[in-house]
Amino acid sequence: MNITQLETKRLILRPITEADAQDFFELDSNPEVHKFLGNNPVKTLKESENAIQHILGQYKTNGIGRLAIIDKVTHEFIGWSGLKFEQNLRKEFDYYDIGYRLKEQFWGKGYATEAALASLDYGFKDLQLKEICGAADINHIASNTILKKIGMQHSGTFEYDSLPHNWYTIQNPYL
Image (cartoon, rainbow, N blue to C red):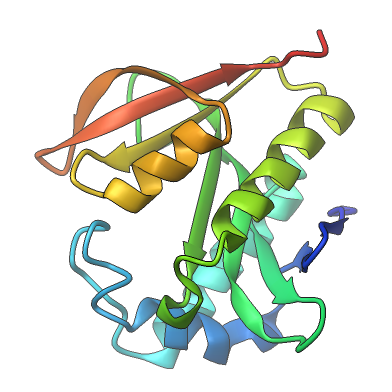
């Protein structure tokens, strides 16, 4: 398993480690962060540790997974972004998913867009994926805006947890 580290102008995207548990807890215990993710924020550090173990398992099984977003200057943990092989959200098929989740104090600064663009670039140039997909609750304006801003095309809607979600796709421009 050799998960790649990515860099942008302002960010380092590095593999998530067990040492990120406290930052994961701070991120995922915030009800505002989970407003469009089922309104089920974590309540214990153990839940965050379990989430990290799940990501580490994805690294081993799929050779890909979410990456920690770190500010190059302050070295602060901003959140996570990146690609993962998704097998649960859309029951009818598996796909490569782009995602991001940031601590609330980092919203609105362009970090999610910057990290997502680096992830698309890596997925298309290095992994040579044919297509990358994304989803967002139809009411989550910021997430839908980011997916459009990075060049994804709205490709319909679907229900997840009885809520409507927008579905986005983008094809590899290098193939």
